[in-house]
Image (cartoon, rainbow, N blue to C red; front, side):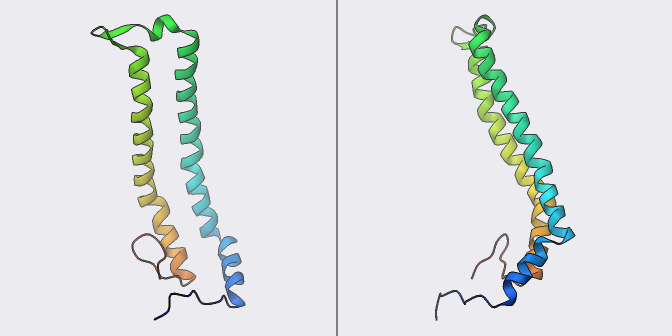
Length: 121
């Protein structure tokens, strides 16, 4: 039993180019960009707000919320981590519904072996 990958045939590059030019692949890229770009902008704006407030609104960020050590800055900082995990979770759900089914169909059309989510040999 060999684990070598077979050499590509002359028709394989044409097959991949045809997929790249297909409407289904274009829709897949649009779906990916439709989530990734707005979410990236939203996260950067949220992060920039945190940094700007930390630099220029020290009194506000230093406002005590609970006890003597929990202030607005600490809560905003912790919310950065929370927002990162929420975005990852939202992307996972979005990919399961919108991206993975189309990618699996495209992969099946070009004849790649798939197991769950991805090619394997």
